[in-house]
Length: 82
Length: 418
Image 1 (cartoon, one colour):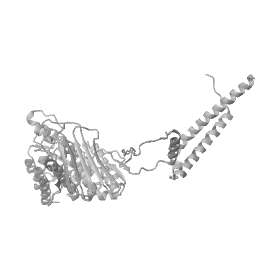
Image 2 (image 1 turned 90 degrees about the vertical axis):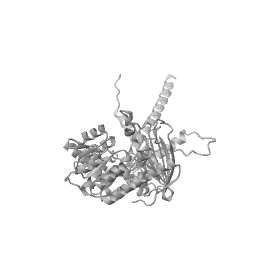
Image 3 (image 1 turned 90 degrees about the horizontal axis):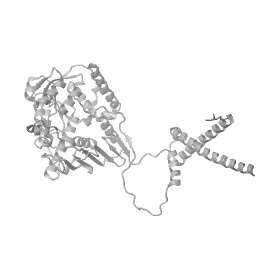
Image 4 (image 1 turned 60 degrees about the horizontal axis):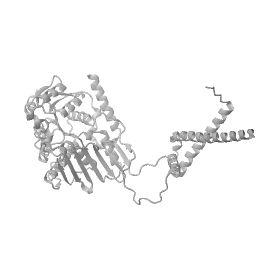
């Protein structure tokens, strides 16, 4: 198997994306506390759900990013053939 | 052996310290107050009367208590006497007659674990001989005998404790505290049951010993499911409601184990308490799916004491984030009904509830009961409430038995000694 090299730029991008996902999950939790009028302590007690949600967001985003990349690559290949 | 004893003692003290942390709990279990304050000192001498399987279990617990020694054992069935003496130790003397034992031995107390029909006359003989008495439940085979035991105790001024171990079970007493704290609101209904799927028989070495060994199955010696099982749960209901039943009606039959037994293999009863609360009770010997349980119900919640769990009527809301996820999930995946049932069935709640008591208990209360009895004897401290619980449970149990036999409503008797 060929060694995979992840460039520092890619690492940085992924860290930023996952941080944004985490922030989004925290906002989601915050919103749910306000909507359902539950205890503010859930900001901490439900951190495990927030972390799970972070990864759900991240992988969902990864799927759409991959899809976009694939479409763009196919479009570029089409242009090269012409 | 000494290490084992001190470990057992520490376990007891640990359990006790857990419950004695609550002054409210102690106010409901005053019989436990001061037990922790005892220092090792004088050892009391005990006589064991009836060393069958239950007697042997009590002996094993007593053996762990350094403040007592079993100086004699009495049983008129030789294999039981041998087993009892083996547990009691080499210092113990064996007897086949309790009168002879009471006359010859200098003992402080006796433990009675004989068949039910023997309880009353042995306990009365012991009390008349100036000896404290622990007597296994149910107290006696008739209400009159139970009352006579109370009278004998009053005359002798000694301790009489009836073996209702749930009075010493932390889980039960914690539940009682929660009920007093209004966690489930006023108790409006109690349902209790004890279901087994076996013939309740013991192996008999020769046919002439059938009635002696399987005494639970014959009316001369036992009231069957009522005195052997129901009495425990009726005691719990009485204690929780803080009342005795006004009346009882019920029925019983032998519909499965038609093997020559005289007692019923299934009973169903309703006890009515002041204020209109009912205890609905049943016991069967032909199905064990539901096991045993006491379900205490109120407008704010339900408790199951044997399982040690509690369910509020309105379950606490889930965390906001889970509610939001759930709502989104429903919006995406739920099927929109075009038409459907206009009535939602009242099926049972399926949530897991919360534990009444988180600690795993080593014993069902019997061990602590033995500790308490030894402690009471050492201090010569009679606790009226404990006898009241045993006596009232016995009377209510026998009322239920009478209702089944006569097929009529039986009222709480008047002119009882307590």
